[in-house]
Length: 393
Ligand SMILES: *Cc1c(COP(=O)(O)O)cnc(C)c1O
Image 1 (cartoon, protein in one colour):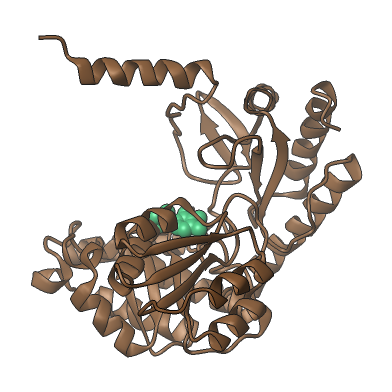
Image 2: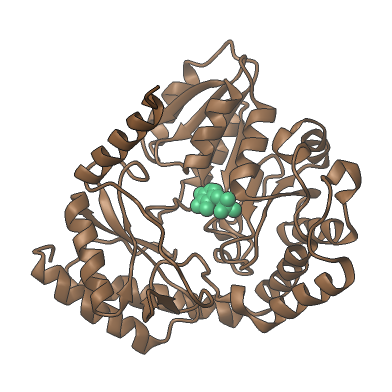
């Protein structure tokens, strides 16, 4: 018998290729640093989320190695069976202290944390209001929850308020937003969202994946940046980006954490994180809290690079975040830009649909604290050269 399902798949892949949307994996041979080894070449790395350069930091690596020596590699069981080790508890306490919340809970990734929170807090009788540019994991989580899914245009507070006004009759209402948008690098209007959540008696849930360790005086994230203190806000963040480790957290009221431990399937039905990762994350939080120079170095790189791009004629914003989209629009042109940069020694991944809306393909540049000024100048030089060749500036 003919294998029809797989034939479908191959047609679909051919279709993606024809639209220049086919993706494939590249192999990185070396640590995630300001330079990256790709295909036997060493390139300036403008695509890593390792914003503070911590993933290859000796202090994190030594902490992880010590934990492996003492506890082994795998946790061996889920948290609720017998995989809940002392280091899980220590990291959760450390996160709660860092974020100044009552409690925190670990998840195996940011993706899982979003699935966990939204699918356990929201169900058929509830409604979720979601910014149109929220991360894919939030969208998947809302669909999984079976709650009514209402999107509002990007950062459009007026539109959100009109949706809120027309949402009586639901059991629970929840607003969810990236605090720093992952593909756009701009900030959610958190003061206004906090106000609306109060006014309409909604929960507010924020995804701090690109804010944790970066924004605010001590790197606590977007709430610190905006000076918002509101214990009702539910926060999640990943430990895999600026923190340089892996896994994710949710933090907030103790009662919320107790609820998630009992109800969140992506927490219950999975093996606990390896404790080496927890030990590394604890070391990272110590560094993030005490080493202001690391963050100010990143901040200087961000200011310098964003301003320099503007001087070259790009229309990027001057947002205080390390995620800088260079909007190209067309997917073919975007990938050609990326390819030419690669050939000149600069790695920037092109981002195409469905990760971003059709017609908004872009180079997503990310900066690190460990980029040297000469690395950034080198990259800017190549970006300018190719930007002119392709008629973008
Ligand atoms: C990366 C990211 C996630 C997923 O986090 P992982 O720990 O990598 O699974 C969730 N939300 C946003 C906004 C992200 O950028």
